Figure 1 (tube, helix red, strand yellow):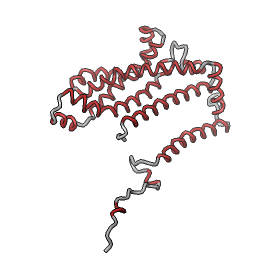
Figure 2 (cartoon, one colour):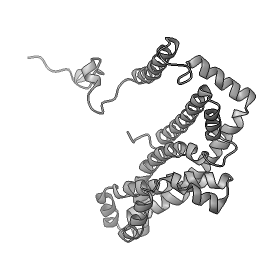
Figure 3 (cartoon, helix red, strand yellow):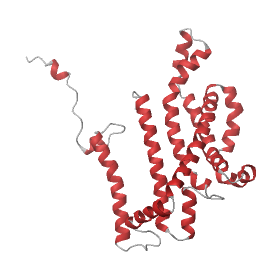
Figure 4 (cartoon, one colour):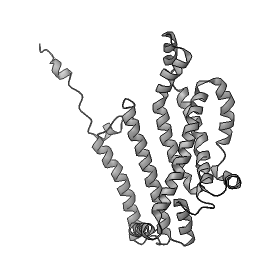
Length: 278
């Protein structure tokens, strides 16, 4: 009778290589495959765009070719000071987002921790979050003028109320068993909040901030749509008046690129601070 080799039993399972194995829910895939698929998605989009434009299927007035859009971008930087527009938009988005985070994260934690705060705050926050941020533009112009503060306020309103509710959900999802265990071990109420609830909520809060900063970028066009003299949104509106479709598309792609950069920065920080979280 053959005795099983313990060394063979301890060997890790071989990583899957079949297509069906890669389609198992939430199973990891090789990093090289992940990167290849990510680049392929961008490459496929560029290929379809090139086929439609260089092939003459769409009028360049409505959809310029990638080469024309790139040329329009070069002109924006060399002739129209697009760098300053980018910096102005980044300043407005980040200021509005950080203001929303500084106020919204503590408020969301309080609302998700104490039922009294939830009953007091959630109805108002839930009501206001359904109001479109663009509807506040006339009021903010009346109250704050047409400077940067008005545009930052638009981004703040578009981000703050969603952030509060999402952070509250993160705090509510902390397992009750963890809190009860801390009480059993003799922890006081403030110790449970500081040493159990807050650390357990931090990964979810950072992930929520990553989502909200993406929403903040979507509001920059709305913020710079009216009474603006600088910014990416202002450039896009100006290009629309002159039928410079290539500049419009380049501006949209710039916003997408900036948003993608901030998204990956948040992912990188999340992986560094919480490597145990999948």
